Structure formats: structure tokens, C-alpha cells
Image (cartoon, rainbow, N blue to C red; front, side):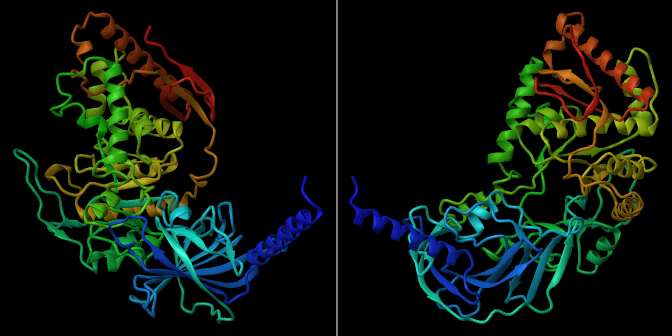
Length: 562
């Protein structure tokens, strides 16, 4: 049994802690907490030396909602007078509250003294702040108290930050807080990403003949004067090198950087995506690479390999979400226990009909390599459709997109298309606008590789047409609950249906065998149901019947190969 004095002491301690927590929940404006970094690796110094957290005033954003201003000053040298960067935020709580929940941001700003930039990042459509797109951004890029930290003058004595430990050195009071002047507001459109996969264009500015032999274009890097032209056309996603970065970083566009970024300054830019724009073709490469060619026998071999290759590429290989982390760590960068992962890294893929399996394995979304040609499409379809039916261009695109959107909706991921040089120029504008109407996010172009290349003037023209279409046809946010569609066609798990040549699947070598017969039956049933949907005027998706409950469709059609 505790003594009465012991209970009194316990009660007093609780009161003190409660008061301290209460004071700490709304610190006095001008309070400065200074922390110095201690490396979590024994053989390398941390990539920053100190971080100060300075509290600003509270601000009411409604009658019931009170928000706290604060900012971080990050220094690479303890004696550095001017910080490398200053990150300022208005949130629903103090970032250093013990056992804090996720913060909700009402404002997010960044000041970089070296370049003279003062920026505020905002989602164009919602008006809400846009945070940098790193996995677990708040966990790693905002200091948080260590689990065992005690309070010193109301502040946690030990925090975790950027993968390292930071130790409280001082608590200052009554420092002035000044609102930043001349803040450049970047209203970023993350709902529609329009861009090219290269940082150069063709010098010719027109199509070159690709027959009787393929002709390569002359490629030149984008110059400063090219970027305003692309901004005006509606492009908002760019691959840039170290020189080109300065022309896009403080504009209302997103960028992927091939050069080494400045840490941590560039990582606080909400429009910086990282090093990889996409991960490359797990389904397509499977059909020809030396480690799989001739060995893939069954459908189950193929779909399992696609899923696993997508997962491995996404998590461990170049062009994956950890690529930048790997590159920096290989150069000796000390991440401590932080994992740096991009959240934007979709699959770029030719074989749209295997979208479900690729997205199950990895990737933040999927982008189709669009070589849309109606005459070729109808001819190829009639090789396997016994009823020899013809599609219109709208129906052709709906066929392609039903697989992309269906696979993407299965995993709540975005999708889109990339226009290639082989795409019929009469279909290309419709490919963009119809994808937009069906909820696509990605609208890309391929630049380079002879006939694959999309000439730059055509890229600009298609971007302008998409921009005009989006302005005249506003749509609901793709981040809201998806609209209910007419029908979903479900392919049995372990299969895919394709009008492309799949002779590399050796289970189909015997045309009269059971597997070939079952696949032919499934393919015809899929074609029949697609045409049923088209006759009904239904907006439909195609995906895999994986046993999960199907929601968001008025009609569910389950197909069988038996």
C-alpha cells in the first residue's frame, strides 16, 4: 500500500506534468528551442549540425479551431548564422507534443536564404497546403520527441529528426516573430500531371520519315526560354538536370531531378518528386529478357513473375522508389535510420491488360505506352474475335482504359497514358481528352528513340488541347470517392486476356490442348461482354476477380475459362 505522502507526491507530479504539457501545447510566441545533432551511425557525421524550432503566434481559422505557427531552422554547421533553410507551418498542434498524433497542416512555407526564395505550397483545387511527397514525411522531416524524453523547461530534451538524434541545448524566450513578406504562392495541380520523360527535345521540330528505315532525331537539352512555353501549354511535370532545376523549382510545377539534391533544403520543396519519374515495364520486359525467355510456361508463371518483378523493381532497383536513397547512400550520405522513399513512382508499361498484376506488386500508379491506331487495333482484334466486330476510336480507347482504370481502382492508385510517335495523330488528342474524362491523372509523352519519339511541337499542341478541355469540362477530384460506374468485368484470378501475341506462354503451344481451349473461351467471353457493355452505353472497367468484395459498380460480370 502506498503511503499518503507517496500518493500526494504522485498527485503533485501529475499536476506538474499536466501543467507542463498544457504550457507546451501552446508555447509562447518567440520561444526558441535549439537542438544539436548526434549521429546514429558510429562512423559518419550527420548531414546537418543543428535545428532550431521557433514558435510563432496561434491563429484562429474558425470559431472552434486554433492553430499554432512554428518554424524549423536547419543548419549544416553549428556556428552557421544564416540557416540553410527555414520551414514554416501552421498546424493543429505543437510538433513536439509527447506522443503526438499526425499533425494537420493549415499552411506550409519554405524559405531558402541562399537563393532568396520564399515559397508557399498549395493544392490548386482544394486550397489546402501541399506537403513534400516523401513516405512518412512527418515522421522523418519534422522533429518528434524521443519515447523516453523528459521535459526541460517544457521542451523535450531528446528528439528524433532526419534519422538522427537531436539534443536540447537551450530554451530561449521573447524572440520576435515576423510574418514573411513577398511569399510566392505556388498553386500546384497534382490531379493532372502533364510532361515528358526526358529533359530534351528534338531540334527538327517535325516528324522524320521512319521508312524504309528508322531515322533518329537530333536531341537538344531544354533551355531556360523553353520552360515558359511549356508552362503556358499546360505541362507541369519535368525531368531536369542540375542546371535546369533553377528554372522550374520555384514555379507551380513538379520536377524530377537527375543531379544530386541539396539536403535537406530540396527535400522540403513540395514540388520535388525525387530521382525516378517511373519504373520500367515489368510485364513487357518479362516477354524477352534472358532470365525468363523460354522458361515461362503457365499463366500462373507469368502473373506471379509480373507481380514479383514489379515489387522488386519498386522497392530495390534503379527507377524504384528507393533509388535516390541508394544513390546518396552509395556516395557516403548518412541517413541514420531514416528511409527515404518517393511516393510518386508509377509503372510505365506497354501491356495494359496486365495492369492489375503490376500494380499489385508495386508502383504508385500506371502509365500506358500509347501507340493508338484504330486500323491496326481492329485488324489485331479480328485475329482472335470470332465475330469480327469493328471498334470506333472512342470504343478502342475505352477498351485500353478499362484495363488501366480497372487495375488502378483495385488498389486505389492513379493511371494515365503516354503518347508515342507511333500513335495516330488523329487519335492522339482524343486519347488525352477521353482519358481525362475517365479520371486519368498522367498525361505524358515519350521523347527519344526514332519512331517512338513524339516531336516537341506536337507535345505542346496536345498539352494545350488537354488544358482547354479540362478548363471547359471540370471534373470531381480524383482523390475523392470514385464515381460509381456501370459495370466491371472480372477475369478469373491467375489469368489475363490479351489481343497481343502471347506465344511466349508455352502452355498455349498445343492449340488443341486444354489450356489453349480454356484461354480461347475466356478471350471470346471477354470480347462478347465488352461489346455488351458498349451496346448498353455503360462505362466499364476490366480487372481481376481476386475474391475481394467489389464496390463502385452497378453491375458485376464474372467470367470463367471453364
